Image (cartoon, rainbow over all chains, first blue to last red; front, side, top):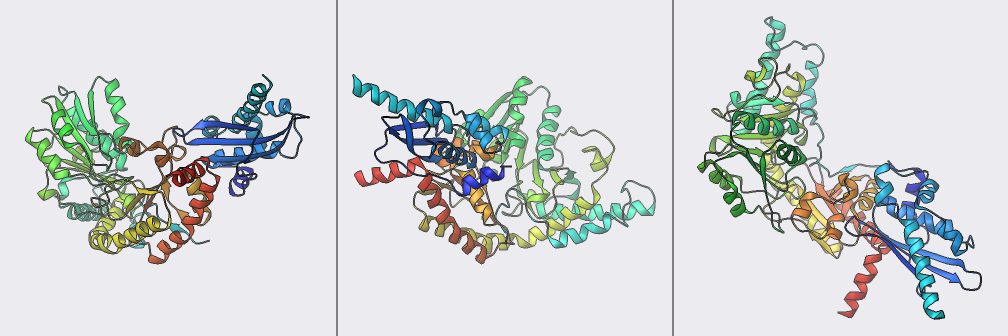
Length: 130
Length: 393
């Protein structure tokens, strides 16, 4: 039922873990539905680009694969925060050659977790400035 | 890659003896049992023999056996066939943990103006018998309770329930799809009025079921057609499958002891080793009052579909009560009814064995399961939080 790309990311997830001194932490999903994704990012303050990204996910094959894919879409790409905010859940699913329809809602939240991590960074930054 | 099939509550392998018994009825012996000529008559004779085999297995009279197309049809026929017979009675009693073949009839009945009581279960999966007793009314048309639960294997005290139900003069249907072949059934010494079984759960093929209807039970046919099955179920008999099911029932009767000794020992071995090797693992349901072949375990902080995919990659076939595998957005209704926490319900795996499983297969699972759970826990955001909380304690 899953594409080869989904299975590849599920069996060999990229960038698993938590950045210890992360600049931003984002969580999406909830345990009731059975999918929770946590993304941690390291941001270069000068250029406002994402320097490192890691994920941890509780969930099904699609949840793990989308989390892994979103980190790959960001890592090593020197994306600005603005550019990273433009990554959507739909783009993540497309990068994995699609997901079964039932998974599109519940398990395709990796971009939301990324956005939450960026917002967390921005909030902390605003807190420091004031 | 070898296949280790431990999903026998989903379906079972057709026994070679069953297939062999069926084959001639696809080819040279294709007559219609209802025909007047010898060619149909010889088939009729074999159908009668199969009916006797099923009756013998259930401790019933052959005239009480109605062949259906599957367990779901048997359940539906029992419910609708009874409600139709008592049009003035508008109350139906069942449990919260039934198979969808009964469970999903409930909202339909409610839409049709019936009152439905779904009796709850406790944390171990036991039915609340007081609630059941209090729900019984003069207007109760039928009580339908499963013999044993398909997900946890928990066995209900069917005869105790039957006493309650029959003392009020209410018809009693039992879905024994998971129980048949695993625990002894004897309709001669039972309070059960109607009982459903399914062929493919006991080494017959998919597409054949039985509804036992005790003599004297009021029943209106659910499938209306010819005179087949004494007018209780129209449609030309599914001859090869009926003959296959007859053979399967004969084998099931013989194998009942092995199910309760060797298969039970294998299940207990698998359970003990899993609990020993994998921390934060819970068995779902009463471990003592349980089918001998079933084990439902929850691995905390990980999700069932992920476990199944990794097991499947190694040739191990099991099932899960997680939302992703239930085809809905919520985890198993059985585990939720029992109050299993969501994170544990999502991480539930059911292993269900058969007489074809071996000790080597259990060892294969025991060898490969712990690293799978560990791998997923290493990815899970909850696992580290749990470890941290342990250190604080």
